[in-house]
Structure formats: structure tokens, C-alpha cells
Image (cartoon, rainbow, N blue to C red; front, side, top):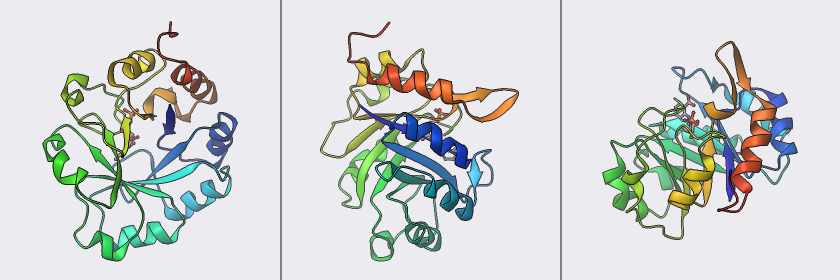
Length: 207
Ligand SMILES: O=C(O)c1ccccc1NCC(=O)[C@H](O)[C@H](O)COP(=O)(O)O
């Protein structure tokens, strides 16, 4: 089971994900409405602290071609796109895309699955990064092809084992569920440890 911890904002959080040997991390860019939005300079600082095996994902919403080019130059491994992939993407940028679906656009799945720039999918709640779970029945009929299939949206220690046994994704993606909570921002290393350990338990051995 691949683990993606999304919405890192601080270099010290790189230490937490290195310790748990997670597979992917995400950083939100060019989206000031998000409390997790960071600058490219900050993202570079965080990337310098990450173990080289961890895949670095830039998380964006309907980016411009200029933005995707600057993301590629910054040294990311993937770009996670919510909303639209800009036209002319493949001529301007060679980063593999994780196409995020936020319910209202799930019917567009066939169009994206046929796009060679798309290396994987992230099925997420209507509002990304909100910590809300969506109805997993909506994706039960989605064919699992040879592209990466991540489940996101309100995952946490209490529901990740059930989510894995229900959907059988290649990976799980979490942000809010490994954060401190109301009175303190940022990622909680103990919540990351517990989430990773639960998600990596073989199906059937959960509590
Ligand atoms: O985190 C955000 O604020 C955000 C804003 C805009 C686009 C994507 C964003 N986050 C993506 C993610 O954190 C995850 O891929 C996913 O939404 C899971 O979030 P959560 O429900 O909080 O676990």
C-alpha cells in the first residue's frame, strides 16, 4: 500500500515522513485560498530535507502553463491537478500528472484515463483538503487500470483500514487526518506514525 501525506508546509515535517518511509508527499502551490499553500521557495526548502526515495508531488488547481513549467523546473516528480489540465500541457511540461477528481468531475474519468500524460488518479471529496469523507460507492465502478489509483478525502486512523478493504486502492492520501487539530497547525508526527502503520497492515488484520 502506497502512502501519500499531503499538504506539507514546514521543513521539519520532512523529518516526520522520512522516519515513516512514506512513498509520496504533496505540497499545495499557487492556491492562496488554502491554509496549506506555500511558495515555490518554501517547497524547495522542504524538498532538500526529504529522503530521495520519496516522490514529490506539486498539488495545484487548474494551473497555468507558466505555473506547471516552474513546478517542473523546481524538481518535483509529479503534479497533482485538481480542475483542468491546461491545454498544451504535454508540449510544455513532462511531469506525470496525478489527476484529482472532486466528485463533480468524476464523470470525466474516461477522458483522463485515455490521456498519456496522466499517470494516476486521486479520488477525493468535493472540497480538497477539507477532511471530509465522500461516498465510496461513487468510485466502486471505476475500472482500476495500470495507472496509480489513490483514495483521498477525510482518511484518518479510524477509517483507513475500512477504506482499503472496501476500495483496494494502490495508495491512500491524507492531509487533515494527520494534522494536530483546531488549536495548532501543521502535521502531527504521532498521527503520521499511527496512520502509516494502520494503512500498511494487511487487509483483515485491522482493528
Ligand atoms: O489541502 C488543501 O488545502 C488543498 C487545496 C487545493 C487543492 C488540493 C488540496 N489538498 C489536496 C490534499 O490534501 C489531498 O490530496 C486530499 O484532498 C486529502 O485531504 P484531506 O481530506 O484533508 O485528507
